[in-house]
Amino acid sequence: MFEKFTKTVTDAGKTIGEKTKQGSDLAKAKLKISTEERALNDIYCEIGKTFYEKKEGVPCCDEMKELFDKVAEKTSLIESLKSQIRSLKGVVVCENCGADVPLDFDFCGKCGAKVVKPEPVPEETAEAVIDHEQTEEKDAGINIEVAAEDGTEESTEI
Ligand SMILES: [Zn+2]
Image (cartoon, rainbow, N blue to C red; front, side, top):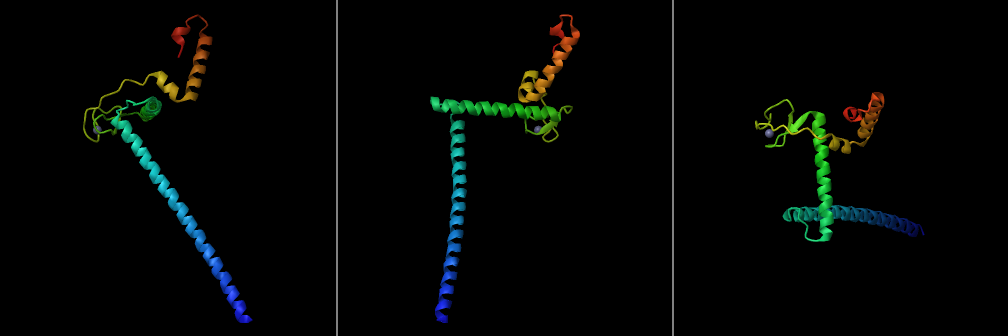
């Protein structure tokens, strides 16, 4: 009888052990799936980029045109944000090596190329990027206009 009891306990232990192993196998398989899915997504992304670059931004159908337009939109938004960061940091980008060069430098500190100073970023672009600043500036403009009170709104408007 004692022997039987021991056997039952051992069997129970075995079952729990198997279940634990099953659980960890399951977790491993799930982890593997998500790793593989991420890798697959990277490949899809690479296919998309390769396709876009091969087409040089010229879409082949309406469906692609919509997606290509989104790419162009995001690219130009990112560019304007980058140029905003550069103007906040007081640097320009070296056209030769892409390094950040302080505005008062005539030559790139990294590659020595002559730095081409860009045209100042138009006020409209800067305002479009940071919305709350646009609001503040507009408020300031209104205050000045009210204070002027002589019909020369155009000259005092900011
Ligand atoms: Zn450079």
